[in-house]
Amino acid sequence: MPATPVINLRKGHAVRYNNDICVVSDFELKTPPRMASFVQMSVRSITIGKMYNLRMTSNESLESVNLSRDAHEYSYKDGDGYHFMHPDTFEDVLLGEDMVKDAKNYLIEGQKYLILLADDVVAGIELPASVIMTVAESPEGVKGDSANNVYKEAIMETGLRVQVPLFIGPGDKISVKTEDGTYLGRSN
Image (tube, rainbow, N blue to C red; front, side):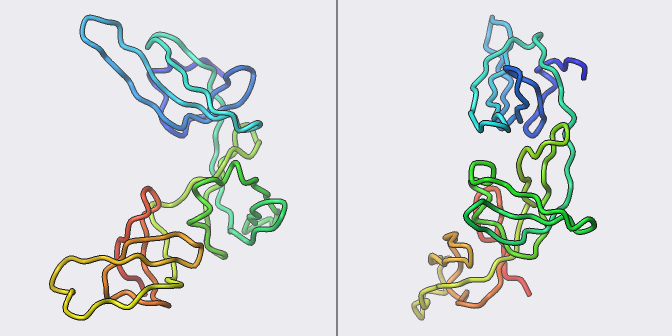
């Protein structure tokens, strides 16, 4: 693949660094006064999971790697890791704990997620902007507090803790933003 100037990279792009395929997880272009601009970014190796913090001048390049996204349905978790099934081929894709990390709190059995493939090697998972989850535990709201914009902590079916309005109770389905775990609204 051709070399791509680092200034053109963004979060989610795949590159070759240290003879390994890495995915850009954080990217920031900095332009200090009276100095040349530079790129500060973090890349994660998909084979060993190591994070690299890079600082490169804006005219440097890295080799691009073909990155594709393929929808898979989350099936289950066992001692080996997290299992996802391709809906057409029924192929089982296994993701280890290091690849799932923060996404595990948003994995709901039967829902579809995008599996990232870099040069046909599993690179990670991409979450949707929001997921619909069921409230497992939630304390009773105090009567009379509803006039204020008061929130309480609820525990979702995956163990994720979300601040929700007082009227939300166990068994309710809510929409949760995957970027920061915030409550978006009630769902049917």
